[in-house]
Amino acid sequence: MGHGKPNVLFKTIDQILHPATDRSNSHPSSSLTCHDFSSFFRNKIDNIYSTLSHHKPSLLLDHLYAPPVAPPALSSFSPLSIADVSGLLLKSTTATYPLDPWPTNLARLFASDLAPSILHTLNLSLDSCSVPTALKLAQVTPDLKKPSLDPTDIEFLSHLQSHFSLKNS
Image (cartoon, rainbow, N blue to C red; front, side, top):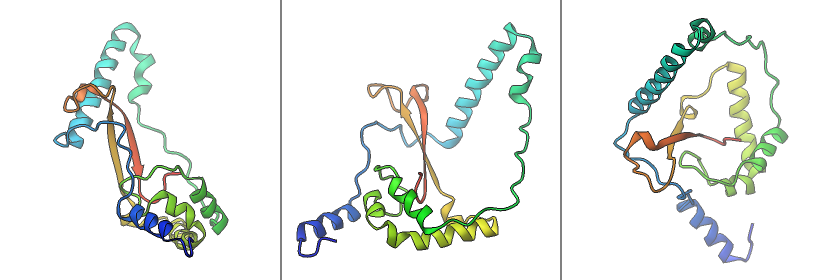
């Protein structure tokens, strides 16, 4: 990787120390909590439900609040291969997110070096039916409907983006 090319080395180090982030959208105020979003969207759904229930027989809407049916249980998983993991790393998006353990361009560049460690963790998780707590992280970021709107007003937020640790492929 860049033998005899100091500019490649310094660019790589700069990307590790200062990963690029997507600053195209304004993000809402950090004073809003998860509970605020949950309450807001639940109330929005309840309002829609009450409006619809006045116009349609309730039997047509009962399925909206019916308990979900459990999916069929999976009895086994096929172990992944290094080619599977390398392929996923190489196909991952070019965006880097705050929870990513390394910049995406480096993950792609070193896919063959990273794949064995990731493969081991994934296959252990599949075998044990357990995901390590450290990998159970997500960041949910609400976006403004329009950049010119007030980011502190929950009414102007929509389209939640979810970013998970490791790679969201």
